[in-house]
Image (tube, rainbow, N blue to C red; front, top):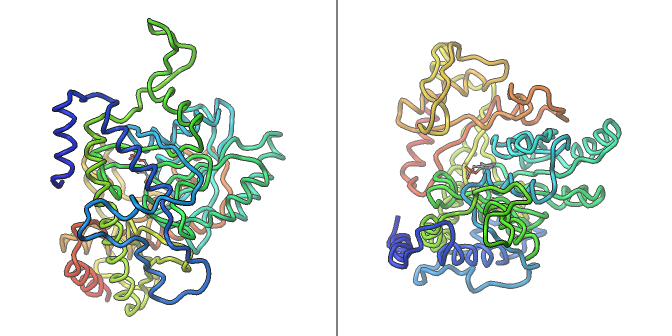
Length: 440
Ligand SMILES: *Cc1c(COP(=O)(O)O)cnc(C)c1O
């Protein structure tokens, strides 16, 4: 936390706005709106190696207010509603699109559960679509197959499509949009991991009908916990705001004609968000810098492949840097991988985790990946497997899925490496050396 966050939080207390509305919420929404409309350089066309790691907006050293505040041009105007979590943002996007019980919603399978769980909150069924190799995000060809097949089988079109920017990597968004438009199905972009990622210079989360942002503690910026929904116009914004604040009708008493939610962001959290917006560009630049160091280092290690922007129109924020480990790579301790169960669970200590008696499931990372995780853990380096695809999760075993094997095979070979603002150049060296040392 810097002085900027403290300033805005103090202001919330000083002005008695310690509630889920107020000047910080409005200010934070205005910042996000401006950010969503900012244009990066367009990079359609020729690539040089360096161009693959553009720092779209350079951090302004002398100006704590970032460059995007000045570069407000171009884009169709979006509206933003600040909410208490990214999950709430996914949920309200579905509410706004009229998803109800019995509907089907297409969702990228390779994602964190918060992309798809809200579909079930609405009593609807997620239909999972697998990824393509280049970006690891939704395969547009498979998407079209899924739409055709669901429509043929159920007599109804899926109600919405949820595409994800996994680990911050932009999806093949033009192709996905083209399919969505062809079948006239609204697109929701889950940009929870992709704040500041761009495709052809345009901010991820601003292509479809709705865009989801997250400010959870582990995301690109944090409000301690929070999210936002990017809405297509003012009417949509007002509708989302209505549902986020318990859907109240205009009477002098509580009158309810719709079911609403208590999903608005608090003014104190928004104060943190306003402070964080002043360092967003620096965070993104740092993640991209770390990505470049990893990429250079791993290009010299056989069997380890860094997941980078496939071409210059992609401009990942590199929220998490990821690698894949060839099955042929032998890792120290591989023989005893999965011999013991882990305590706790991936994703931090919060909450209650069901303990398990057996470390195996029928879909898990390869033994060398698990051995690498354990080896790094012993060297005090936290790594993680990639997210396990939703179509392989027991809670979704009865849901339709259109698969090509890509996400499942990536899950078996991939891992996430430390990537945050506290990772230094020295840390990257240490991490890379440790990985080298783990390989037999
Ligand atoms: C984190 C995340 C969310 C949910 O955001 P929260 O703010 O944690 O509720 C949604 N989708 C994806 C892909 C995420 O990684």
